[in-house]
Amino acid sequence: MNYYTWVNYTCHWTPCEEKCRKNLRERNDAAFELFYKRAVKSSAENLVVFSHYPTDYFQAEPSFLEGLRDKSRRTIAYFGGHRHNTDNTSTVSTFPNENWVVGGGGGFGCEPGIQQQGIVVGEIGFNDELSLYPALVDNRFCCRGHAGAWQY
Image (cartoon, rainbow, N blue to C red; front, side, top):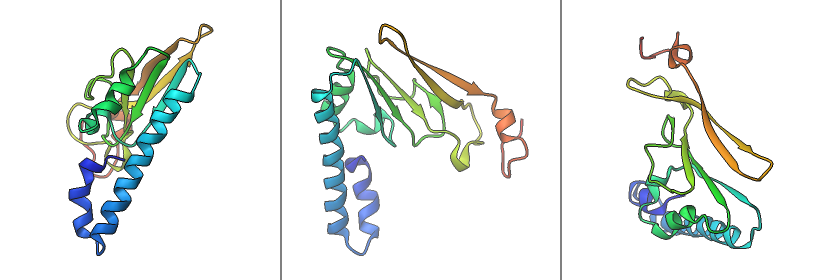
């Protein structure tokens, strides 16, 4: 969860704005605490981290982004969603580690414009090296006959 992104767009619409702000803050803090705790305690060669949001939603959390970039003990692969695309170029870099947007199409996978839809394949080799690559589909097949679909 990203408290900074959503608190001012969400809570003022609720009948209990202060409780909403408190809940968002607590969930935000617990999620980051879980990441930091696992990053320190895990002895794994690879750490896979999932969130609803791509890394560009976390610019107000520079220590989290630095944690995702830390390759001193292991490789970290981060996967966020939210956007309806599959790519590793529209995000804030976590180099030397990798991060991907894997937003699927959801209900809006047939939007106009350049899109890549698919999945990201992750393979761990015999030497524990993590390899990630996209397996994309042709959008024309996904959107054919879809109500309101972009016409090709």
